[in-house]
Length: 371
Figure (cartoon, helix red, strand yellow):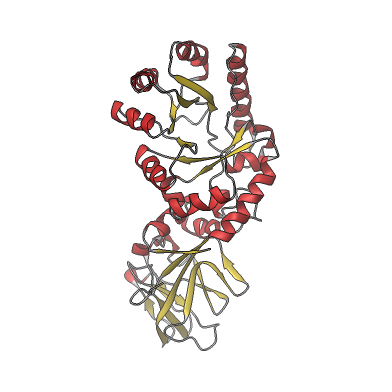
């Protein structure tokens, strides 16, 4: 691939994605289906190439956020392969398009349920959907106490098929397990309510990445992995990073002790130092909070970021490296030799989460896919 004039490269390792999927399959067990989350451009990894790779791994369904992503995915993957609209529908036009394209919306509102039924009937089709229940996230979903009444309403819909109930953990990755266990119990209660009303629900799902690895009791008919597929730990460090972000050294300079570095002079060299100016900054997806806190890889060694991260440049202290020269590779995310920087580590340095790191870097670059 042509890289002339482009010092920074984002590489997507599809082989690592395949290996992560197989680990997810093992963790989910032989009976649970897998809804792989590829929303937000597959967390910055490229939705269509990622989806095609997962199809080759025999994933059971794919999850996107809104209709536009569903349209893009259906154009790339024609047919009736299950694609779930996790954030639901926003209008009658969207409901009509979902029916036409055989997409599976998540529903959490009776008015939209009726609209979807009307559009399905108008087109002479049966549309599958999933019902979102808010077990403690405080976001989308009906109240658990309203489950029975809502399901009574579902009975009146002639052209819809309820595939399962869906919910979402708010804090499954936290050390304190109390709230997540309450959510699991709440979800089981609403499932029992639905079953007592005669509903057969094969695709119930609450187990996200952290849920399926830390709370195997939450695994129902389907699991919904996201960050695990892309190498985020979610309590399981064996998963492989899929994204690599590489740049290069632009300039090397030797400076005396007491030299102020970058905007705001937030760093002064404590001793004579060799500085390397690197080819990426916050406009390229590096968090500005890496300033004086983060690390990069040079010559297979971790070296500290010094001074404030700039829009297009970052400075590091390369004093402990050998003969660093302009054009040398610098790794911001991923591996170099035996050294590695993970998205979880970068997120910790920046005071954020790995999801934001991956989406931010991936969305700003032309990605190269390694088959």
